[in-house]
Amino acid sequence: MEQRPMSRLIIVSNRVQPPSGEGGGNQGGLAVALSAALRESSGIWFGWSGETVDEFTGKIDFQRNFGVTTATIDLEPQDLDEYYNGYANRTLWPLFHYRVDLAEFESGFAEGYERVNQRFADTLEPLIETDDLVWIHDYHMFPLGARLRQKGIRNRIGFFLHIPWPPYRLLLSLPNHRELVETLLAYDVVGFQTRDALECFHDYVRNELSGAIDGDRVTVGDRTITAIACPIGIDAENFVEASQSSAARYAHYRMRQSTNGRDMIIGVDRLDYSKGLEERFLGYERYLSSNAGQHGEVFLLQIAPPSRGDVQSYQEIRSSLDALSGRINGAFADVEWVPIRYVNRGYPRDKLAGIYRAAKIGLVTPLRDGMNLVAKEYIAAQDPEDPGVLILSRFAGAAEQLTDALLINPHSPEDICDAIAQALAMPLEERQARWRACMDNVMSQDVVWWRKRFTDALEGTAAAAAA
Ligand code: ADP
Image (cartoon, rainbow, N blue to C red; front, top):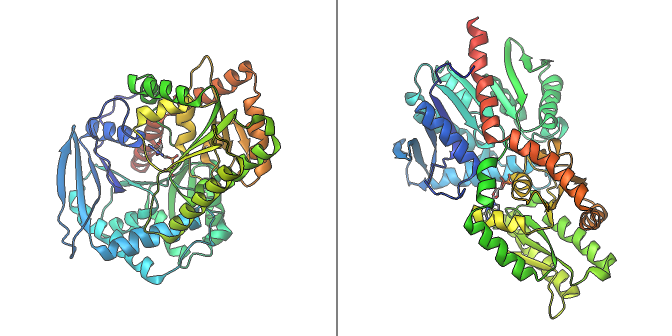
């Protein structure tokens, strides 16, 4: 079955994540899975270097790390403002997370986005050889496939969207939404995280483009592409190993000492308005208000490293969380107990795994999330004999797979409060049964499964065309 020679893979994403060679599972799952495929196929990972230059030159910097070739280009400061901080993070990110109220529609952002995608196409095109598979990632790069086609590239090109796809009526508020969506027709395969996202895409195609859906096939005019739901997973085996490493064991031991017999609830999120952190704090506050007997018995450790600090809505969420955590702690804390430990920094993955394992509850309550890998990491890090309980937003992509978690509406403080009470009182047998069901999914639909499912679909399209 796996005997056919692998086509060379070219991966394109805004930032490249070359392997660092670190042990102990300290690398993100995506980097591990994609690096393995790049190594096997002698492929290339192409993207922005993270650096800026005064004037764009198109010079490609090639590097080779641990058997993986990366090719990066520098962008101009204006590109960064308009394409990255602008169109990607102030227009598309909020809108695709259902926050049209936060989306900024500036024509300069859209122009910068087009310009940078053209720059990617111009510099990438000479690197593409006849049989290469090209796999483009995420909302920074919607038009790249179409720009490559305009330059004559006939290869199989796939696109995977890591974030949600919004309901079609919401998408109509994006100026030029049609041009943006039509660029997806340049791809052979388009992958979404969930059935829900795929169905929203279908709705748009049917209603706005007068297209037709037939199983995985989407046809608009004379163009047919494959569109699939293909949920991303974590590097599960590696994460389980990381959770048993000595660094994890030590972190677990230290955490247990510091909890002093109290039940710990953990939240781990980039500081982002899509993560529902305010709503989470309010739900926990509700729990504290209605369970006075639990004061001093439970606490919430919220780890939230700041991100995208150049964008105003991120500065605002940060200060409102500072205020809210302070207010809740002020209202409930005692000399020996603080209800919320609010920490704004990152931790190595193995240490994080040990911290997850020490928590009775994983509290994952995004208002909208493409997938949410923290939910899967929390499951993978648990002790099978005495696992914690995952409380998961029904609006995280992961909720389509982790159906045995306690699924909640993250907008409802009552739901969060009731789920915390239910989780803390849950008998061991039920905790084990729920955890096992979630763990089966985390292990079987891991990041390698995801990568194969997508690249198999992409390779399959060429076979169909040749037949
Ligand atoms: P997003 O991609 O929107 O940030 P995910 O939950 O899908 O959300 O992925 C977040 C990743 O970042 C996870 O792998 C998680 O372990 C990692 N992460 C989040 N916060 C921290 C932290 N404080 N320290 C280390 N890793 C973190």
